[in-house]
Length: 391
Image (tube, rainbow, N blue to C red; front, side):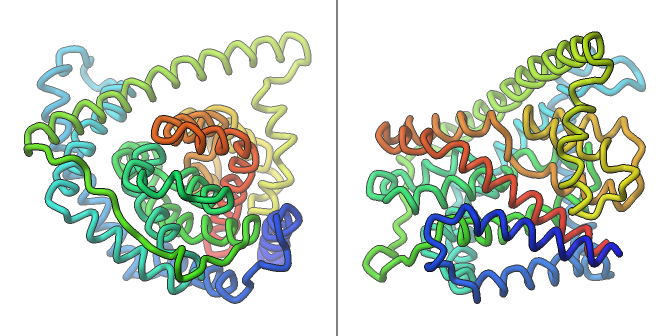
């Protein structure tokens, strides 16, 4: 039965994308089929084989070591503020972002990351049938983050037509920043985080290829990566450390606001309707949860967490997931769904990032913001549905 429901779920997701396509005649079906098959192959390897367990274990152990190193710095400054045997979200989850951001800066400075991003992107362009810039941007967004990635393509931003700009923004919203992955692994099982990162990369190309199909000519398909202004090593290091701290503080502030607002709305809904706001969202989104492979009896609590992520952010939803008892299969489906930046606040973040680099293009992004969120949410649903068929 799970395979029948899962296949129906795949058809519904791809069908919703096709219905909202800007030009159905231009949709390239062969690359889409290839990428869907790759999602299943990679997902199966990562979740169901010894090789996948070894790879995920290696990545998880690497991040665990990095988080331990980050903990040394965090404890030096904030150690006295933590009570024994107590967990503090800001200190334990968010502040390690500062160290990971600094490490990314070092890899950027030494030209290691730009090399990896560029050539993985070029390889992907042979598979997805899209331009080199779109493929580069998809990989770069998964490492640099949804706002920082646009700095590396600043030179091209002003030259891009709306349809190519949409694809770049959709990739940014469908993935997550490598600087924040370690924090996710504190809240979710690493195997689900790694699986979602890889499947979302292909999912972003799949959904964008359907919703926003186009062909890039050889003249347009030129990839020139902007070189940052020359800085000394310690100038760069200080900048990335401060950027990481800003991200940690901003995420912390958003969590305070969103959690408090949701608590207030829940109280109001319980007082008026006798049901919490999150449970109401659970009823609305439960059909999608079922199509992803969530059993009927767990559809409402699972859908409630998914909807919470959409209206607030992934951290709020992840902390909710930790407090709800779900079966292992449902936990896997919900976990991979949560690993992306697809939420309403990301519309403002991406539009603001582009506008800071090119005001005209920033206004264009703001106009298709809801369509952007729709596409990125379909990517998360697609990834969750694939995982539901695998686990």
